[in-house]
Length: 400
Image (tube, rainbow, N blue to C red; front, side, top):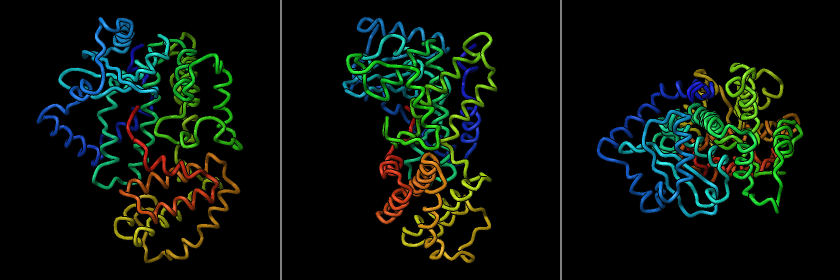
């Protein structure tokens, strides 16, 4: 089995759709023209802001890198860097001048053991192997051109599946579920000392089971906004990796690839806006709230203009027309629709609606104070912390 054989199926499928999108292609072409004029300066910035880890300085880290390079089939020279930070973090950059750069925070290098670092290293190299950096999510999300709301949601979903693929690459290198889970636990909690807490894989996975329960109460663990981050919430990632380790990709006689992907899609389903196509009563009232909320947010920006109509048509169909819609009357129904969703939808489902409205609002460009107040009012009515709204509006849309 090689690295390409373990890549997440939905990562591949959504990436193919994105790479065929006009705005994505245009952004990629603009970036290509910029790089033709000369390097983007990644290496220069790294050399000026961090320490390059040579083989003589860090033979153990290079030994791990060599193992991951061979395991994943990386065919480009690596340069490893470390920078001073109390936060656990690592990143891989798009190649420049025939080199691939991977950077680690000092605290991560000091706190993670060999197998845990192997997972982190493999995860970052996985982003390169699967060419995730070819889709410039950050440039698209933060660019000057308006991002269609449907594309914004699709980019949001793809980054999560891309992280699942990268996790599999890391697990493929580490080949030890316990170490992988403990690495994700450290990343989620910031805790490393056994004097403070003793990691328990079973209990960590149980946190995922609680998330899946309709009456789950967020906030008992990591912040609620992490539930709908562009990156999958860590217990969900552990659960997905547990399925991966139980598959035939990692052990003889394991579950098949198709069963693995169905299981992962089921886990990720709680983070997708599938209520917009749902036929259940709960999905219906969620969709009604989304439509009324989207119109209220659009109207808050000095009334609904042509640009807002384009966004609304993406969700309501080309037949949508303001001529047959009483905007004021629809907005007046917002409190009633919020109350209905609050009474019938789970906390996770309510968070989905707030998340999607925030993503759509962000796609429209700079958020006005009036738009933000509408989003906050909807979040308040659904008893969802405002931090979810600000997290989506201010968050980095890129890969980790």
